Image (cartoon, rainbow, N blue to C red):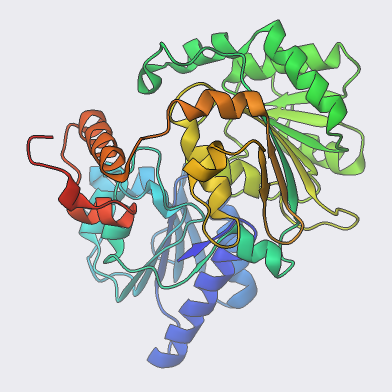
Length: 412
């Protein structure tokens, strides 16, 4: 089940369990799997609203309750041999995998291989992974329903957005993209030129409560100090010693006592921050998953909030083509990436009051990375996947990505 952030994935799962309860004539035994404690606690709170009298247990950290009717479990703890081997295959009627774009990881595969539930449900807002791993294949190649950001905005469950795509000052082209370390990427991002470009956009595209996505702890601290020196009321939230308390920071931001939070990863998935009205993407990424997660967490509806302002950086590497493809996918109808990049305008007409403006300098950078034909694009993607994973992608994976595997010769 693919639902954009903010459209109620966890409630959907709870209601489906309720439907199974009606069918069975009893409350099903449920296992809810996620990779973060915060996601498990939020899910337990949601299920409690639908099943107020059910027994609920946590299986994460020091908590080890696997006997409750509803178990909310860390995949990392479940995957340990001692715990996994004690799981009877039919112990649970219904298993939910939250943020199921992570499910191709070995930890999830080990747990799912052990279980034989009546029904297995994967929940995600972003099934397209950066490494193109096959998510749908783990769920019988069946997507029961899909509602993306565009549909959520159309029906008023999410607010419209204004996207400003700026040319990045980082020189990505000579560096192997997948071989960066976080430290190297943070060092590239911590420059006066990049921050000056950001601050110009900061003033041009205003917001009252801003979430700034950063590369690393060091980068978040750097951004905090740089913006604070220019009068911005900002704190950094991460797992380091100099972090502000996350909950306190969010409360201060909601009350208007802070202008911004510089964050590292903690706000990528499953965190509800409805009062955010501006998102700044300082973390370079070509991943549609990360991009849509960061965008989605600013789109939640809140009193007095009319739209989300997005400030993003687009670099000189082919992976950033996927970011523009993702934006085009939100537009009504189908507009090809080639036609957009060949136009003299960086504007994309989207639905429900959304606006996209990609700087012409960024468009010019991306034009040289555009594949010259469908066959070349399929071969390029095939080789990238093969080299990145050291395993040939299956024809099914290529088809689900909109490619024609017949165009790839065996010698590729």
